[in-house]
Image (cartoon, rainbow, N blue to C red; front, side):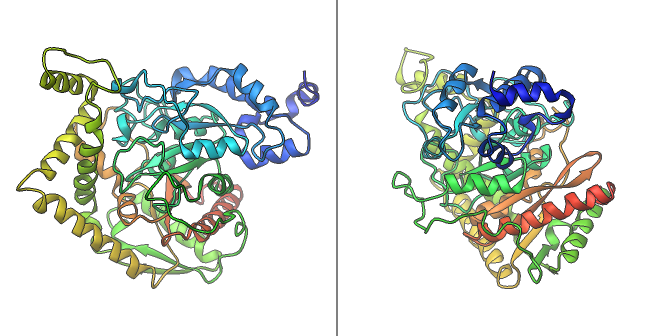
Length: 495
């Protein structure tokens, strides 16, 4: 038994918070002071997984505890000290299978690590497990997983959001210290909001996509999902940066994204797009009003403005993303990645393998995309959607000439019930109505807990101009500190 473990046993009831409930930066500080050891964190994590995972079902696979205990011993001199990180199961890892929550890939074992995984390992992290998602990241509830749905830790009858619902639920249930997700149209931010954690979609091109199984290549981005804003900035330090393996990766000087945290935001101009708040329910509108009051208390200026093409974002997004999915998923044909379903002919092999390998939502999007790209329809559908995308990008460019940051709810509602929207794809798609525009424009956006609606977590989304992550995180951190202070002072303030 380590000295720190023995001390914890002796203190007994004085340890009111298990180590798995603490944010990453606090754990690293405790390890640095030799008050705890990485193995203590690992032990608490696996205890939480054993207790909560049968109900939550956040993970598709979990690394053996003995492996992580052995690995952490040789990583104590590295910055991340062997602390385990959960990874969405569409990011490839050498040690654990990468299934994308699909029958097509349920036995796929990659032979290399994604760039983000390599960078985290180089910094001293270990990989705790692979988290559940909507199949091939196509969904907003994690109910489209081919294996099982994940449940929201705040209410087991509700969804955790999607498609990074497993990562969000794992962090919220303290089955992970932090996690990686991927965001195409809101798949980090919306589940972060539903589960009451922090989730960041970086600027398109800031984080390498090499090793991320592609859904929509012009939209996909990997980002951190954490217990607080500081951890988000800290993880971004390790995963951001140019990668020659990714042709969309941007060359930029390295930044310390924690550097501006704690600085005041007095004089910052905060924009509130009227299209994002006009149809909110009563409790949600009260929540937004409380956010505006907090920013005013922090010395920021509030400006109402318009993003006039917002209403076209959802149809444009689903045409573009489905078209790119149709092309990207053509490689899953029964030849290379899974067992062939038929040997009678090439056509039968392709048809039967894809019919049995893909779930209903993936098939729906492949068909939409194939139609949009087909001869005679390309310009009418895909081409028009790309022109709308350009107009949405221009809306943001105009807005950022007037303001520093835009705010909105992350989703129009808190988490909905399991099964509630499965038979209504449009209702499901509309849960991403506030996150999709920033994705189409390639902008950085973060979801931070902003109070509660109907007794459930309700997230505030902050959007910045391209590559302004430092400013975005500075404002998010200031808001997080303020809302925590106000909640402690008056628990009903942000309800």
